[in-house]
Image 1 (cartoon, chains in turn brown, blue):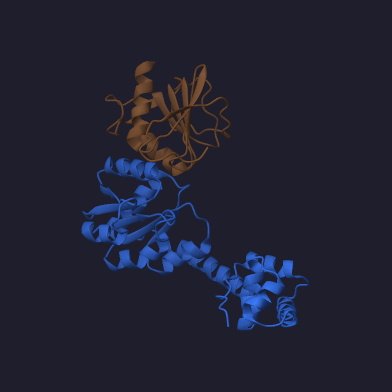
Image 2: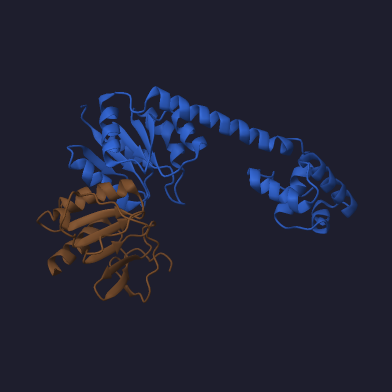
Length: 128
Length: 223
């Protein structure tokens, strides 16, 4: 599937079989509760920066209350926590589809910006 | 720490924005360069007068490579910290030669980037002398190896270079002869000259070797 056109933010596309290579995960929090949302990215620097932003609720599109350990950001070399409710796998190239794995279904969606990611994470946290 | 702006020049928007917000949360003033608009990076930098620029090297197909921006950014007084996913020592070392204060891999931690920004803003050393020298030495070795690989190609005559360039485009000897208005026998003699100088036994091997070493053919002008 190729890159989506800009302006297609949060475009949902049905996805039958998400085949995304995942090799492991990095838990960036000292936490014993399973996270609600795990975000998987390809770059360690992106994982750390995004974790700081999402966990502290710093992005304008994110939840009002800092979600803390309810959100984890990991790199592709680690497996997501198997008890996590949602796993959001972001593509290496912005504009390619991300994959959101939720109980009973997977969907692909295009997230262009930090606000898109933070908004989706905030929505998932509200739904729990 | 010195006051002023940190400018992030990075085509991966999510990384740029996340890094920007996370650095702002550490008390830094941060701007993210707009790489989708018309304005050049140097124009944006000139308007912001950043003390530090976090510069990616691959800025998308419609933008120049990051290393080309280093002299301009350094020239306007910014300290340039290259933050790249590239592992090419030639590119990374060239950035240091051009005046960058440091190069950092995108596999480094956020704290490393934060520390680099703070050091740059304070006028401190961002990359250790030993690390700089190691990278520059690796770059010089890479350049020497590249020169050695290209040396046989420098022995080609201009016409032999043009002929090889057309072979790389998949053109047969007959078509090359027509293009240069010479006999096919002449072109075949030139091809033999190419093979001898490159030390290979077939046209295919010559073309493969040219691709392997990154040789760029001269323009194939018609007579």
